[in-house]
Image (cartoon, rainbow, N blue to C red; front, side, top):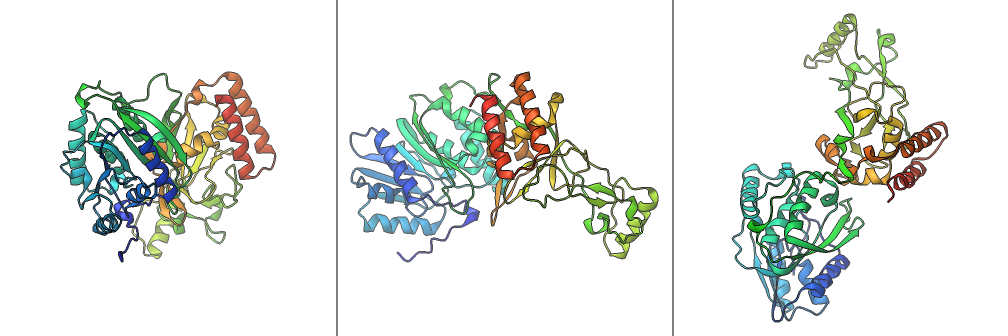
Length: 446
């Protein structure tokens, strides 16, 4: 089969490792009760990943596959595979989310496309949502990744008692849109298994979950309306419930506003935290100097600099943004929250925050650097390539994390005390994160 199988990121393609595919196929076979031919749907077949897995298990004789893919190459490849291996497979080169599918399937297996909501064309997105929302009588979060919509459309094609197994980004557990989707899915499906998989997608630096559900004998319109918010009894909340979050100080032109010792007004420049150069940095240090909150005289001088450098005229007064904690939203390695002990202005490379309700900043800082907080926050980030991740403001705000407002006064006191010890004594980033994680698990009893 001489077909180019190179991934197309614009189609949200990520290939499932063979071991994961075989594991998922085994789960389907163990939970699907079919007396005769088993009808299995794969709504995003890719390079015949799951038909191959069933073939390796020698269990394709009694299976009839229906598979979809928008990529013509994948359809051709899967057709060839079926013919050459005597596998009964119907291939549809179309968008499953818009396809008119009348069959109810005994089982569904998938690794759905991963496309962020802002990358889905608006008109197509509205068609997706209109069809699914009218069928389930629910409102879905418009910031949902495309894989969420595949879960719902597939659920609609699942027969009562049928099983659906999917490998999905673990954002389904940590993001606001993922938790809302799970609340709705759980009205119609019983979760049979939920298996964490560490970074299965190679260059996509993100963890995943293999999840399998069984469909209850219930129609979508019989189900009670869902609650979009987390239950009041939940111990988890969106990060924005715990922190007042803003973006840091924006300099119109860095080469104009960053001070140089040879500048005429260098003595008027003020410290600003711009960059964490030390890989083990835990608090805001190593300040640059910039012309912020400048006098009128310095502002006029800045305007002259813009003109000299032939830059478009911009305002020359920069209002500073500061807070007790900051977090770099462009990340490559060692994501961390820094404690701003000196209350210095923070650059717009960072999200700057202050805990709500006077929760101690030192305690918040320690918890935010534990795996209990960093992992759900980072699961919301997007891969920019070459190991670089970016976290949009709304993604950072909506990360679902443990609610530290529920902690006892004794636990908070212990967090603050430990934070002070860390600040005073040298410690590596790795050791600090481990220490923070151990203590966070202790105070939250997990």
